[in-house]
Amino acid sequence: MKDMLVLTNSEDEYRLISNTLSDAGSIRRAFDLNTALTLHTQSPFDLIMADIELLAAHPGMQAFSSVNPFVQFIVLCIRSNTRKALEAVKAGAVGYLLSPFCERDIHLLIPSLNRTRSKDFELEYLRDRFWKIEWMDIIRSKNTSMKKIFENVRSVAPTIATVLLLGETGTGKGTLARLIHWHSQRSEKPFISIHCGAIPDTLIESELFGHEKGAFTGAERKRPGRFEMADGGTIFLDEVGTISPSAQIKLLQVLQDGTFSRIGGDSLLKANVRIIAATNLDLEDAVRKGTYRKDLFYRLNVFPIEIPPLKERLEDMEYLVDIFLKKLNVKYGKNIQTVHPSVIEGFGHYEWPGNIRELENILERAYILETSPVIASGNLPIETQMAVAQGIPAPGTDLTLAQARQHAVNACEFSYLTCLLAQTHGRINDTAQKAGITARQLNRLLTRHGLDKKQFKPKKDA
Ligand SMILES: Nc1ncnc2c1ncn2[C@@H]1O[C@H](COP(=O)(O)OP(=O)(O)OP(=O)(O)O)[C@@H](O)[C@H]1O
Image (cartoon, rainbow, N blue to C red):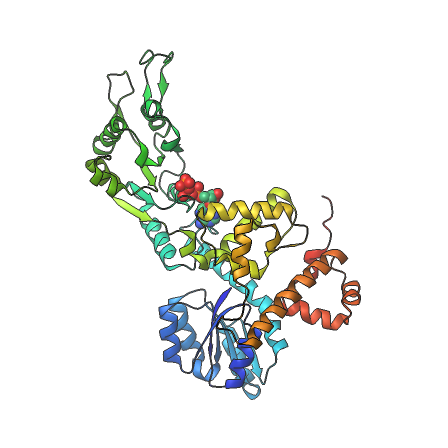
């Protein structure tokens, strides 16, 4: 879904664009450049369709790009001004529409729009050189808090500062810890992760700091702990809020003096380890209640990063779905490229108590069960299906009847065409005949719904 802005004084053009692209995302309108820039600064747009005269072409595009470097432009321009439109394309616009234009002209621009966006994104980040290419998908976000988080990660990753990651389960704390490690000076050294909550109190100290032979019953051999294993690298202490009081003391010692000793050992060992900790507990509250050491909390809380739950970063739903489908296609080889737009929209009505992990799991299940090239709501768990159903406009919403009807028609056409194309393996003539329309009409519908017949061709065995 895109956030779009139409900058025009023409009522007809605005109406045509908003009707044609209503399914592609949210659309706002401005009548002059200043208002458009104010709206863009408040909440950056992905796509700006602007009258070339109001946009003032190059300077206008630069002003928008300085807020969001990935914003794309389509210029609207009268036929006798084609030269200006071409100049705008040379200056970076992805296309132009010559007035009077029609619905089909708008649809023809959409595939190049998607292509250009991802290429620009990659080029921007390659130029930037800080982020490693394999992490580019993860750091992609439209959400203001997440963008700030990635800026903070960029500042803190190369240092040795202790980082405390806060957030509900499944929000990506472990993923962020890895991101920090892989962008630190220690990336060639080990990243050792330990889930403190999963280890019994009696074993946690020995897991973290190791033990000497005979230190306790069953300690038949000397064993190094995770801090020794992580030497030179990073240790990730997941669920650090759960560790026992005596382990808290030992951890405090590492944070204060950089030293520790194995259980049953006398000698002090040096810890050359960067600590990243995570918790979904309210540690400040635990300190108030006296169940967590205040001095340890302050030592851990040097650079806190709070990750928002998924329901507060719904703008990223499409990016996340994209990442998971790519992974699933590699794992299961089915070549499912999309999730039905109504499903993505419906995801916005769900609470996501398990956050990104829950999204990943339900997509995997739906992927395995899906027999068409598009994931539809039928294979989702019932509570998610109910949320998706809420996204379908019903009487009483703020849509007009005409808009609600158009929405339903689009959804129906989309699922009908994907099922039929799956049956005919993307053969245009067969599909058109079964649908009772001409091949030309079918091609027009495919363009309108962003469907590509190649997606439906049977895969050749390797
Ligand atoms: N930004 C992201 N993009 C794509 N996938 C992500 C992202 N963040 C997390 N994930 C995926 O979501 C799942 C859960 O993430 P992760 O284990 O990092 O969460 P967590 O907050 O550490 O969970 P817990 O508190 O239960 O340990 C993982 O499979 C991870 O790959």
